[in-house]
Image 1 (cartoon, rainbow, N blue to C red):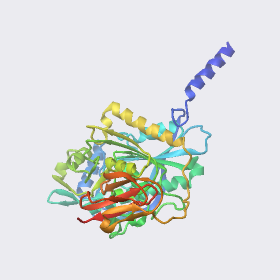
Image 2 (image 1 turned 135 degrees about the vertical axis):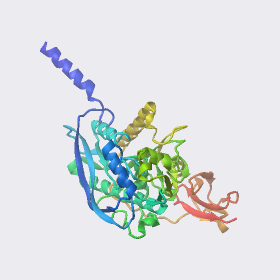
Image 3 (image 1 turned 60 degrees about the horizontal axis):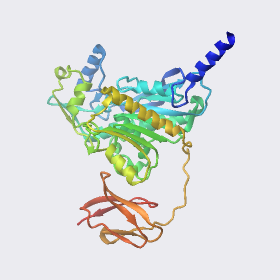
Length: 445
């Protein structure tokens, strides 16, 4: 009898064991409100509409929306993260996954159930990851004028840039505390939802101070990419799962080879699938974020100007042109954040889990930059950029993309052969030839 009971117990334990990073195997512990950056400058003076809405949200269990009067009244804040770990796990080199919520940069939180932040963190930790729900600075400067709420595109850009700084600081914190957290610093991944997806993609693609939007360096200057938080570690993640995200400029993608999963509804009118100004449906978005009481407080109209963003379609096009392996899940007819569809919710989660599991099966990413000796370029442009050619080497594929990332010409080029570009319309393009650095050129015909 004892022998049979022991055998049964072993069978049950074996059946429930599963595979690390693929199946739920652990109970989960949570360490809340860990400070990852302190003394961070942030907007201070809420406008009258936001104050009224915060009061309404507190009294009615709603979502606070943070709208500020100006960019000059500042205060110092601490930024926090919640860290989810698998209980009773002896592994000391686990992948870390940082989760960034959405909310149009004016709402949301690291404790967000609606956008599945907690769901992802709990599910990932149960599979053996260390999962981190990240708080980043929220709030957009909005001026109330003639009972209309007005947001300037430059101020919106500054809001996004603050979030980019915050995510970089969070990644550095995790890497600098890798031993304490039981994390492999070469396996730090990001999941971003909407605004969080924009921040996640910008994290791996914006890697130069010259790529910082000019609005961030106006008065008051928001500082460099790594202006605060712990220093001494790489601030860019090793891979990103971006749920309905975008970038501010496709040129920043350049030749970055980091793995990316792009999930997007093709009918998204909030963070558009292709190219447009985000939040073009701002009245509907704010109606969802703000309760109906907003009208009685004074918000009778919304005038929101946002900078152009380039969605998953463009990112996919650029990565394809660059020959970068990546995963996509683009769904016809689906809007922004299609979590209301239970079947699609399951599909998206499975895509994310499978993507992250695939990363765990690869060698860990390098944590130092290895400089290679540069060779002279064999790619040359003809007169007035009307053609290009190679001075040597073997036959190679090429692609020409416009600034929206759309491929307008592609093929193979041979050494000494001239490829005519006169069939292209007037404009600015990016030429990519395998083995050569991307070359930007213009046609003025």
